[in-house]
Amino acid sequence: MKKCIVISTPGAKFSALAMKEDFREGLRKLADLGYDAVELSIKDPNQLDIRETKDLLKQNGLTMPAISTGRAYGEDGLSLSDPDSEIRRKAVQRIKDQMELAVQLEGALVIIGLMRGTVKPGQDGEQAEKYFMESVSECLDYKAGITLALEPINRYETTLFNDTLSVKEIIDRLGKPNLKMLVDTFHMNIEEPNIVESIYRVRDNIAHVHFADSNRWAPGCGHINFREILEALNKIGYTGAISAEILPKPSPEESVKLTMEFYRRLGL
Ligand code: LER
Ligand code: MN
Image (tube, rainbow, N blue to C red):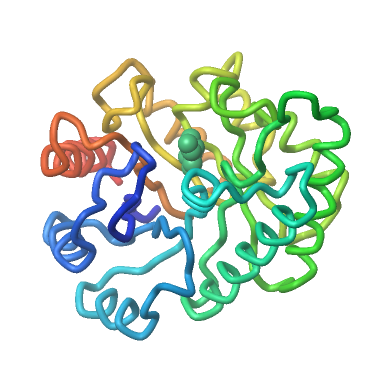
């Protein structure tokens, strides 16, 4: 499994990003520490110099297995389930743009996290879900070769699809092979009755993994049992990336070091 961590381009408002100020320097530091891969958190891929990004990845011996999209919700208000059709249209377009970037990055998967939106006050929950299904279907059909990874997100951040079972239900209902699941230990710790059992239950759907401890600090800084989680991932034959999506605590430098130390202790 690849030792991976989320890094963003500058200006991100999302908090669980260990590295977000200097992209070029950040990549160098992560490579020096021994990371194999980075997940890119980016608001709008049209603002990215793709050639430069690919050069920087190559120079640092890093790959990019996943693109994180939630900043378009937090910073631009784009939601795939919004009651306003114009907002939904823009959200769909943004995901398509992220899929184009994924093609350039040799098949990175595109994460659907916060961009699912939430049920807005006065909006009917079933309608929101229907809008989401329509929007995500359009994206899935746009490029069958690019995987979208829908992430269960805890109840304090959204009212739509909080646990692995509700995401599995959406995946089964849509029945499209390029829709998979991202499991994030921080959200699982809040929503799943038993994290390990849930991993076994959705074993065929998992395409990407976020590691963060119970307090969203680096793995090893809270009370989640990562050894048994890793054992379960090994048993189901998961070979993708383990990507740390963590708060920059106690400092950005410390958080990336603590993560790598813990990855090594786990034998990654
Ligand atoms: C995004 O991957 C995520 O985990 C959400 O909590 C965004 O807040
Ligand atoms: Mn996550």
